[in-house]
Structure formats: structure tokens, C-alpha cells
Image 1 (tube, rainbow, N blue to C red):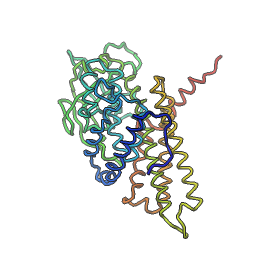
Image 2: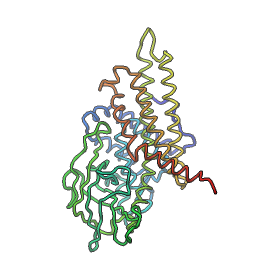
Image 3: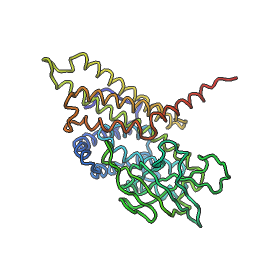
Length: 402
């Protein structure tokens, strides 16, 4: 059901072709099975295989490494389409992309040549890991450590909220590496990103590395979210991202900017789906002798929902285009992520209300969306963190002289 909302001007023929292929895949392969798989919390193996065949795992990886070499905008619009089908599937791709993007931007030549071609094919699947059980968005407080030992680093610590923790075979892990940095070095200057290869699955997936099992969540099911425990995990020095310690915080923040545009895109996709469900149900359901869509109360809801879908999409596209043009986009990405996730929650709730009692039934798709939307308020930095970032950047931009 494609209406005139959330269109994007100025796309190339290739971009339009990619998006229509993905939309087609979503309509045929994802929407019909998403709710059933979600209720069973089942990993969508067939869907993931289909996306591999479409080349989605290589969308933003440069052509020289076997990817499609597309822009962040193309990727964000693809994510929007996929999230419209089932948000969990976009999560499977997002962390993969953040790692591929970090490798492309910051990896050594050897690291790029080794990882990117297999990531483009979806053979190696990425996850990235900053958060820890005792801290969420306060990245500078991490306690996981990497200590040099011969030609290796020995990693110890516990990580939390790893999307794709079980299914991934490459994890970018942020640890503190204090040696070589004088006492009193700022915390964000003594962190390093390690590229850790592992087996897919749960339990001890390589010596010193355990993925205990998947966390049972309210929504955002299907995709596995896990802890990661490192206990004397040995990683060779050539698996330090970019070959140099102390740069990890910057690598991760660069990756998170891409991730934030992606979360904004997910909010847009879920909101669009909620609008589609609401506007269609409102025309089928009759009360007092006419479709509820003809009652002004419902029309006002639809008007608000559509306006929010449109506004969130415009901000998300703007944030992606800014990063693509090589500019810093932390302000735009933060605003887009904040707005899209808040609006998504509101649009989903309105669609839920339009459904009346049926919204509460697990037979209706809106029940699933209602449990999925809250994750967007938290993932890639809470709304509060986005507002802190936005506020700080505004004060930098509008500092008064004197």
C-alpha cells in the first residue's frame, strides 16, 4: 500500500530501483511472516538469506571490496523500507553496517581487504559493542580492559546489549587501553576498538569469550540481543582497528552517527506501517452507520499521524545527505533520531487507538508495533542523550561573543 507520504526527491534511477526491489521483498517475504516469527521470537533465517542474495549486506561497502558502494542515504531509505516490514530485520543489518563503515573509514589496508569482501557477501556478519551492564550511554565510564602481552592484547570485561551477539562472527569491541597513555589522560583518549572474530552461536565461542544466551525482550524479537563476557580473551595486535590504540572512542562515535541516522530511518518505517494500518482499518470499521474514517475525530488523528510521518522522513533524509556530503552531521542525526523515535511512538499509539479493542489482540499487526516502538526511544542513545548532544552543539554554534 504505497501512498504519497515520505517520498524522497532527487533520487537516481539506481536508488529508485534498489528501493523498489527492497519494498517488493518486504511486501512478499517479510510482512506475511513477521508477526508469526516475532511471537515465536524466531531468528528470520530465510529473510536474512534473501537479503544476502539481494546484496543488502554490501550496500554501503565500496565496489572494490565487492559491495554496491551506495550512499548513507540509499542505506537509510532501505532500512526505512525494511523496518516498515519488521523492525528486527533492520537491526540485523544495522550493526553489520556500523562495523563495515568503521572498517571502511578507519581500518588498515589489511583489515579492509580481509573483512570487507566477506562482509559484503554477508558471510562475515558484524556486531559492535560499547555498552556495559552498569552503564548505558556514558561511554567514557567503560571498565572492560585490553592489556598488551607480547604481540597480543588480553581483553577482560563484560559487555551488554549486543545486537546480533549470537549470530555475528565479527564483533567490534570497545575497551580501555591505558598503557602508553600518561596518568590523567582523558578517558576517551585511552580507548581502543578491537576486531574480535568468533564462531556464531552461544556459550564459549572462542577461548576466553562467552556469549551467555539471548536476553528475553518485550519487543524487537527475532534478532538476538546478548551479553558478551571476556575473560583473558587474546586478540592479536593486528586486530586493533586502524592499527593504533587510543582511537576507539572516535571510531565508535563515527559509527554511532551512521547508527543514529539508521535508527531515525527505522522510526520512519515503523511509523509509516502504523499509519498504513490505521488508515486502512479506519475505512473498514463502521460505527454509527459509517466508516470511522468519516468521523472527524478519526480524521484529525490521521492528519496528525501523516504530518509526523512526513516530518520525520524529511529530517532523516536531511541527516543522511549531510553525512554523505562529508560534513559533520551529529546535530542533524541527533535531531532526526530524537524526532523520528518520539513521533513513531505517537503514530503507533494513534493507530493502536484507531483499532479500538482489536489493537490489543495478538492477531492484529499493530500489537507487535506497539511493543517495538519503545526500543527506538532507547537504542543508539536515549532521547535524553540526543537532547544533551543537540543542546551542546547548539551552544557551540550560537556562542555569544564577549
